[in-house]
Amino acid sequence: MTSVTANHPRLTRAASLNRYWYARLPRTLSLLFPRVARAVGDGRWAVVWARTAAWAPVLVSLLALFVPRTWPGTIDVFTDSLFFLILATTVSILSGTLGIALLVGNGLREVLSHDVASDLHAVTHEGGSRLIAWLLLSVLVVALPQFAHLLTEASVVRLRFLRNREPRAVVRSLLLAVIYPCLVMAWCHAITVLMRPVFLWTGGSPSFAAVRETDTWWMWLVLASATAAVARGILEGVVAPRTGRAHEVEGLGHELRPLPQLPDAASRRVPETLRMLLAVIGMTVLLSGTFEGGTDALLAAATIGVFAMLSRGLGGWLTGSWATRVQKVPAALRIAAALGFGYVLALQTLELTWVTDSVRSVMIGTLLTLTLLFLLFPATRSPEPAFQESL
Image 1 (tube, rainbow, N blue to C red):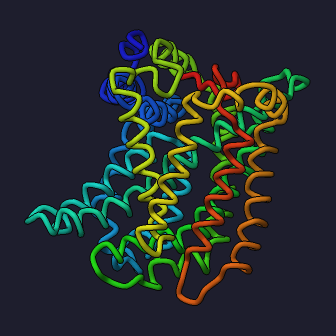
Image 2 (cartoon, rainbow, N blue to C red):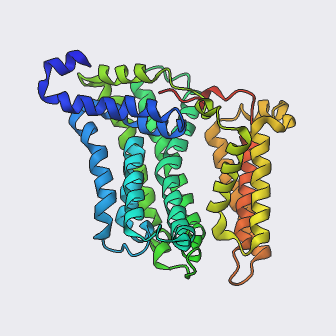
């Protein structure tokens, strides 16, 4: 990095910003938020285009902070605007850094543009509503892209016959272009129900405009996400390594090597019970749009709590022979099977338990799908090698 800066004095500021975005910031975040740190460091492949990589996070954050006020269709929440949804799905798969930047900008806009701290009622109602919307956006721009990358890598490592870098990069991009759009499509269909508490939390009624774009134009989001996934794979795996600045990407990667490889390795100081409780609360809040009352909330929280305890190794029977056998199946096939069978089970549940103006059957179908995901991705004493991210 020093030699490059000395040879290109005009790039000094860009080089400094790049080192901050893709090395220093991830290392700082890793102390408490390892998963966020990995997402931030995900965009370092673009450092070969120094100025673009340096200023893109700033630009995306400012767009998320100011521009949505003037975008056609934006009324209450981010799902009102098809353009914003396309922007979110594309930039987040191109670079996890840009996804985090968009999330931060949008979060600041929500805080500054709504009265969420004037009194206790505003904090618990308006603030809770905006928090749920922000969490749903974080699933789209952070969780889904990172999960898609994990599934893609878990599939690529099994293709041992692809020894050359460029063919592997092409296959990786094609797999990503299949996996990521499937996750985006699932999010689009789920948001119809998950967006309900954003309005119910403040005592209002769910807005049709908030889900019209995802319900009507979801195929455009799927197409945009597939195109961006292919572009990411080709740029990162074929184009970037051929540039003269590819060594800078490797240098930033070496700076990040000491980061913890396990998702919770840097947060051991937080009690296990507290971390599990926060995870259960977060998942329950995200599913609150499917509840019809307190009984549904308790049922969902209890189910998610059981999964959380089993995932922490409290269910040894799931870490034995079943886990060994199921992990021999490629992760991409397992996720496809879970979503496919989950869809069938959810559809059957809807037909058997559907009640007008009630979405309890959606909650039951969702919990059944989560059960399938847990059974096909059982907890193990050590993580699957294919899922151990390396920065």
